[in-house]
Image (cartoon, rainbow, N blue to C red; front, side):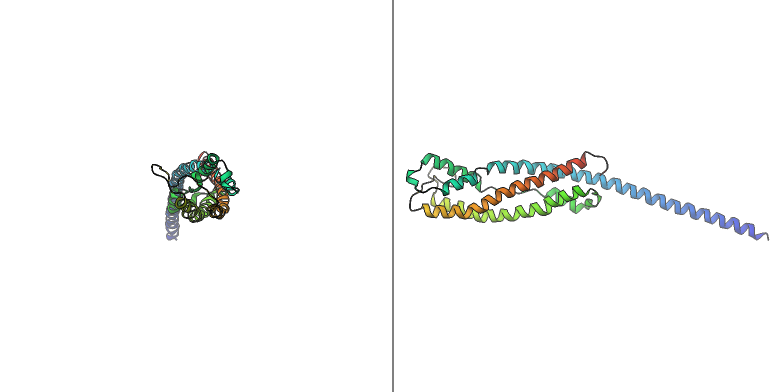
Amino acid sequence: MNDRPNLRAGFSHYAFELVVIISGITVSFLLNEWRQDRDGRESLRRDLQALELSLKSDRTELQGLIEQREKVEPSMRILLDIQNPETTNSAELQTTFDQMIDGAGFCFYPDSGAWKALVASGNLRWIKDTDLQGALFQFYDHAVPRITDNNHLADEVIVTGLLAWLASEFPPRKGMTSSIGRLELTQENLPVFRRQLGRALPHTSWYHQLLKVTLQQLDQALTAVASRLTTDGL
């Protein structure tokens, strides 16, 4: 009879210790989870800040490129309409020609370094905002590969195609710093000149539209990143 109170006391003691141990483990787990969450969000903030700088730099470059290429396609169309180079104003023709070649060979090469660092760090898991996720994936996983593919095509069609032919047909004269000399059209070389322009025009037109679409997608990504950085709790 005297052992039962001792058994109850012993059981109560061990039960209390078990509760304390479980509570301690639970609190420790919760604290560790909170610490990881805090550190992860802070790490994500740094990644997003780097991404914002990268996107701003890309936007400045892309906007400048669009403006630089603005007259390329219209100049091509004007040159394609030439029927008789001997009756065409040579000064106006040269100006149009210069406007075409000034921007034709330049492409947009986005900087994906900050995005790749964000993906490699594993911090994407801390992004709960579906709008932010969507904007980033739309730009870096869709727009960037598409513009990269078209850059290769532009090199083939424009740089090693049209511009290379122009440089061989109209070589620079002594003292000129450009790789292409003055435009000197004749009835003999006009048909080949028009074929070269006609081959390059479709991609030139498409690429310019693609640059504008890419700028819109970049702006959406930049707006989403900036919005998250200005709000509390990523």
